[in-house]
Structure formats: C-alpha cells, structure tokens
Length: 125
Image (cartoon, rainbow, N blue to C red; front, side, top):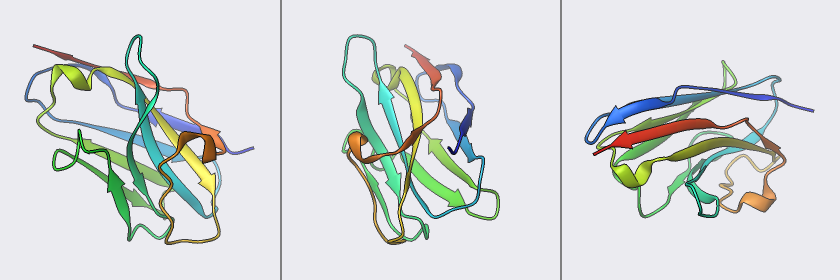
C-alpha cells in the first residue's frame, strides 16, 4: 500500500503563486494526478502526468496557469500554480495509479489506486 504525502497549501491572495508537492512512499511506476474539490462540488481533475514525465494534461480551467512536473529520483510530483483565483479555492488531492505504460496520463479519478490526504488552498479576493 503506497502512501502519498502532500505538502503546501494555505491562504493566498488573488494573483499569487503556490506550489504543492506529493511524495510517494515507494518507488514504482505511477501515473500521477492532482484533483480538487471545492465546497459543495464534486471532485474534479486538475492535472495529470505520465510515469515518464513526458506527457501532461490539464483541466481547461487551469491550463496555462498550472504546471505539473515530477522528479522520479525523489518519488515526488509537483503542482506549480500561478495567477491564482478565488475559484481555485478547494482541497487539492494527489493521486497515483500503478501503471506499467509509462506514457499514459490518467484523468479519471476512479482509475487511480492511491490518494493523498488532501491539502487546502484558499484564494482570497
């Protein structure tokens, strides 16, 4: 059972930047992703990255503002966020899927095997 530990989060003002990190407890081939859930809303896909780090995908709402990258030597995936808006306020979750196809990006939450505990981001207007 792999564990995902997230770091980052907090309160920022509109237009600010912030980064999250998610570290896996073991080395393996994982497709990784970030999701978020705002109060009263369903969890939604934010960004995904393939196991080899070569392929990424983003929700339209964050494309051009958020960047997902990974450092496989550290078992860590990062979500770099810029130009934050109040609508970005949510609990952000890191997710991992054990995936042998290292080029695959996973955007559907039900396909992920492991989840982090979530970290809160609040963007004030």
